[in-house]
Length: 224
Image 1 (tube, rainbow, N blue to C red):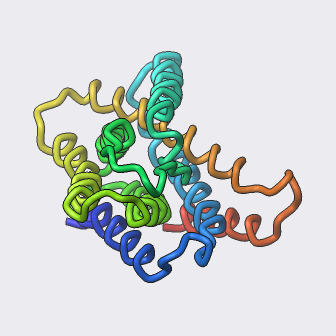
Image 2 (cartoon, rainbow, N blue to C red):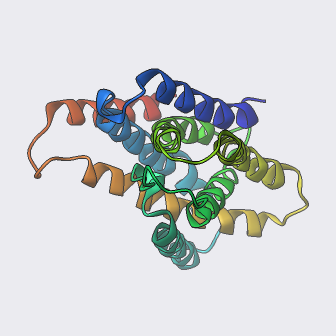
Image 3 (cartoon, one colour):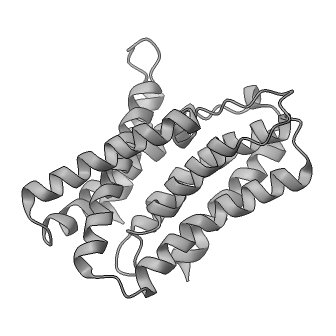
C-alpha cells in the first residue's frame, strides 16, 4: 500500500509545511530541493534506468528518454517550472490556473508508472513531491482563489500519482508499453532533477550545504 499512500502523504506534508511556515521567505527550500533532486536522479540511475535498458532495445530506449525530456520541456511551457520549484501565481489573480493544473497533473500521473512493489521509486517520488507541494501550497494560500478551488487543486494533484501507479500495476498493458512509458518518465526525471541541481546554486559558487545535501541524497538512494 505504500506505493499508493506515500505520494499522497508527500502532498499532505507539503501542505502542512506551507501552513506552518506561513511565509515562503521564512522557509528555505533550497537544501531540500537539492537533496530531492540528487535523490531522484540517483534512484532513477540505480533502479529505473537498468530495468528499462534490460527490456528495450538500446537505441530505442535512448530515443524515448529524449522524448521524456522534450515532453517535460513542453509541460514547463505551461507550468512555468513548478515541477522543480518555480511557482508563479500572482497574489491578486482570481482566474483558476488551468494550464498549471493540467501540466502538473500530467506530470504527476506519469511519474506514478515506474512505481512497483519491487522497486524503491516511490521513495524518490515521495522526496521529490514534498518541497514541490510545499511551494505550490504556499502560492495557492497567498492567492485569491477560493478555499474550494485550492482544496480541489491539491486533492486532484495528490491522487494523480497513485492513479498512474494503479493503472500501470493493474491494467492489462503490454510489458513493452510499460517499459516504453518508463523510459519517457526517466527523461522527465532527468530533466527535473538536473534542473533542480543546476538552479539551486548561487552564482556557480561552492556551497557546502548544497554539496552535503547532494551527497546525502545519492548515498541514501544507493543504500536503500
